[in-house]
Length: 160
Image (cartoon, rainbow, N blue to C red; front, side, top):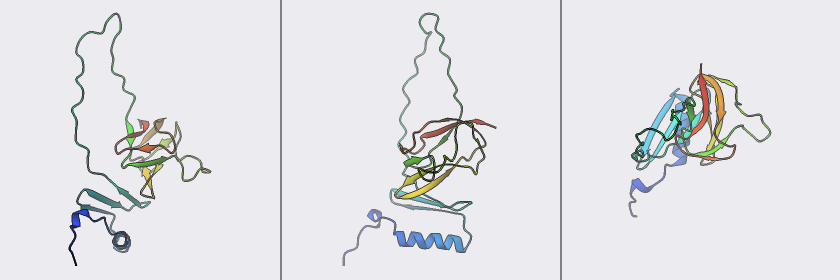
């Protein structure tokens, strides 16, 4: 019988299921597990959230910003389009629970931190994504059914 390196084995889904049941039984709201390069975060609340968070990507230096005066009468003013609600995980973005259901939020919708704004499907698990902010949705930045990356802006909103 050979011993395999535990760093290269995936999480045991049966044990993960048992962990979820234990969280419910003992009223535990959050658990973080790390195994090699994988990290799992389980969080319970008004709706159960299970997702995979990949290891953080290495930081790259931003390209230098040119310093100088614009040519002609043009003025370069930074445009602040407002804060965004970002994807907490990688996966496929869905605006509603099913194709026949209305979207969770639309442009102009008021949201609270507990408002579900979309679903992100990862590893065949549909994760409800909450706004985690209060305000009004001003722009939807991702098409329904599109793949999203960790940290990618999904919605732009006006705080309030």
